[in-house]
Image (tube, rainbow, N blue to C red; front, side):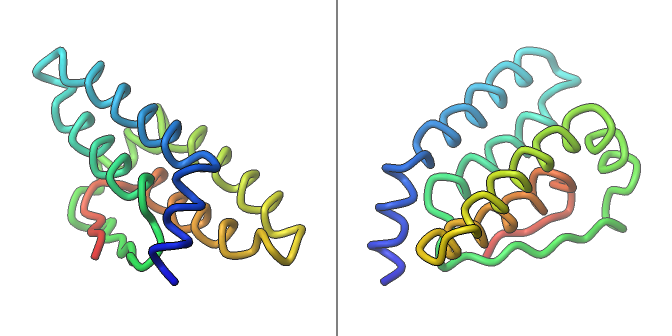
Length: 118
């Protein structure tokens, strides 16, 4: 069931979202200072391609300064986008599983440093 859900997710937008995260990661990795930020984008891209069956755990205490900077500069915009997407998906019964995945991605988009995906 997870395979079918991941395929549907990938077709309906996961491909473009994942490519967007990967492109942002590449742009950030151009400078040495941006490499840690780019690594977090690649983590989000990997989860965005196939989120079903994976769990995100956030550990804010591991890198609090990096998480605060990320949340102020980049994270809040992405988190709001995933929140709106999740709410719109949850309006219909069929879209609820997709909305739940958007909420999972919202956590990672807001506080990626110290977060693990398993």
